Amino acid sequence: MTHHLPDLPFPKGALEPHISARTLEFHHGKHHQAYVNKVNELAQGTDLTNSSLEDIIQKTRGETSMMPLFNNAAQVWNHTFFWHSLSAKGGGDVKEGPLRKEILAAFGSVEAFKQAFHKAAIGQFGSGWAWVILNREGKLAIQSSANADIPDGHTLLTCDVWEHAYYLDYQNRRPDYVATFLEHLVNWDFMEENFRKA
Ligand code: MN3
Figure 1 (cartoon, rainbow, N blue to C red):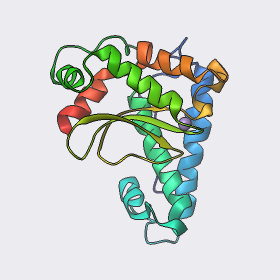
Figure 2 (cartoon, helix red, strand yellow):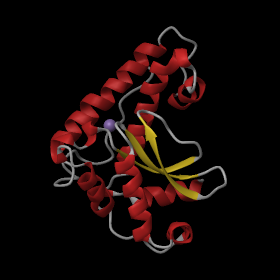
Figure 3 (cartoon, rainbow, N blue to C red):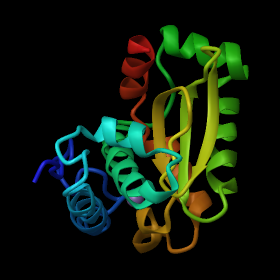
């Protein structure tokens, strides 16, 4: 077993009432675990058996015959990145500093930035992810991706908009879930850390 399910960076009940422990039991314990299991199964016997997750993602991306391995490996990576994009002390305003400056330069205000993120997240048809990235020109940008896909550029933050992320707590109300993510959960410190490392 090369790949393992990473622990959540917070206790399962830490995000209540916004995301329930029950949602995380399924989302982390069942969905994320299933992607990990599938990567181990699909990589077995290929020349990627002992490769890192990042290597697998890079080497299988866009290869039709490797699509199942890509999808599962990317989903493992995306979920781990997502857990770190959440914090019990998250949400609200972005503190003074280089990240805030960049947001104001690119979007005019934190509010406009949040609105653009919300729009991208609810506009993603079907399953996928909403992202904040530094694009290839080094500019802050918001994107959505379908299914397991990861945008080009340097990822700073993500929100899972697959139904399994919110159905138990919000049923079909994705807009409410994303608004709650932005107001109460988004981990600006994680985004800032990724911004500084980029
Ligand atoms: Mn998910």
